[in-house]
Amino acid sequence: MTRNKKILLASLAAVVILVLSPLFIRKDADFGGSDDAGSTKVEEILGESYEPWFTPVVEQFLGGELPGEVESLFFCLQTGLGVGVVAYGFGYLTARKKYGGSSVEKKEDQA
Image (cartoon, rainbow, N blue to C red; front, side):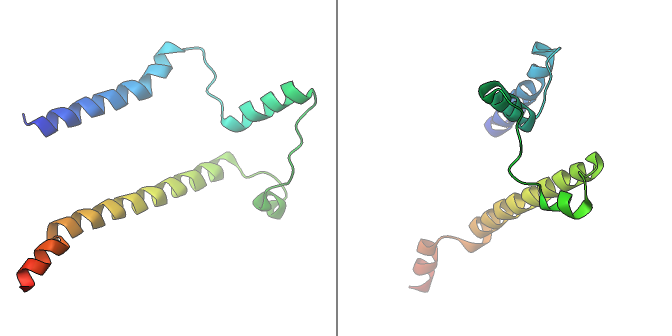
């Protein structure tokens, strides 16, 4: 096994351990979102309930909150678009390196 494969396998094992360890270390933990934690902390500090400054535009348009399934869909679409942009960037850089060569090599070829 080459050195790169060993590094890759060790990195993947570390990621899996980091992702799964909180689930086993804190079995009774409530993994809530940052919105809930933030409004709870504001209520503790101010001593009164938190009132949002504005209502989201989509909620105003629909006259209520989005269903959970739609929020999950938007989150998945956002994640997919982000991954697509990052993957395109890595692919572009790899292809440029592989096929384009450096500017030093091009100058030498022209001379």
